[in-house]
Length: 119
Image 1 (cartoon, rainbow, N blue to C red):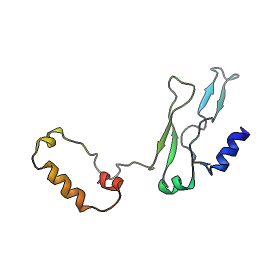
Image 2: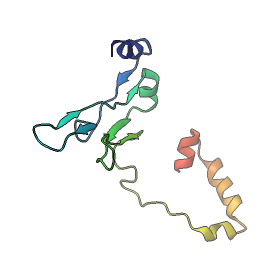
Image 3: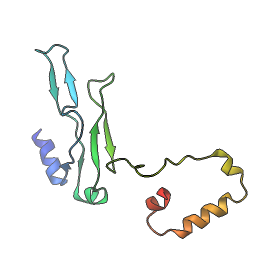
Image 4: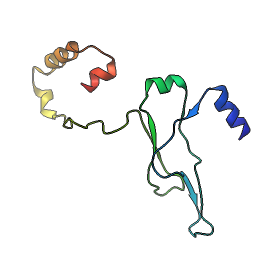
């Protein structure tokens, strides 16, 4: 563990926290033999944290493993909050004007690739 802590320090990685149950690993079915620990973590450096300031880890419910899955969210909250969910219609690809329409919309927005794709 000391070598692991040293590696985290040398790489300037910090725990980014979590939501959900406090533990990620569980063993034992009986109360007196049950062990729960937070073994699995998400770590990031300052550059990642600046790129994804709303980033977080969510501990999901256990399934067949004794470890719970971790979900890395790069945005917090409901991404679709306040807007309707986008649904792609396959028939759009058969429209002659599709490519032109996509180009017009794409060129009308400035921003990063991710921002353009979101729009």
